[in-house]
Figure 1 (cartoon, rainbow, N blue to C red):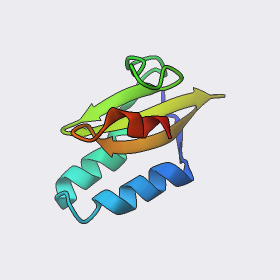
Figure 2: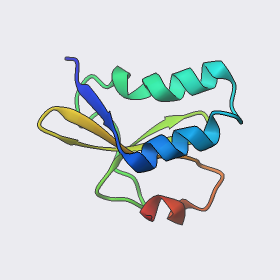
Figure 3: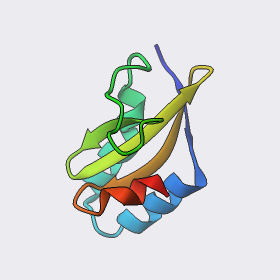
Length: 88
């Protein structure tokens, strides 16, 4: 099943911050990760944001929620950073 993907303003801001520090291939992999979701509950809940599920792409974590068959990417951040950043 194919889902529509919506990126929040925070997630878009996160992408703008990492575009200059990762390779083009890794950036593409991060951006395309939500498109690989086959069923909405496919990934685990995040331990810091229990209202979100997480997709891990290398050192990056994408937090997402879903509503009405739309995947909402909430945040994207480097897992080597303070995990409390995802709470903001």
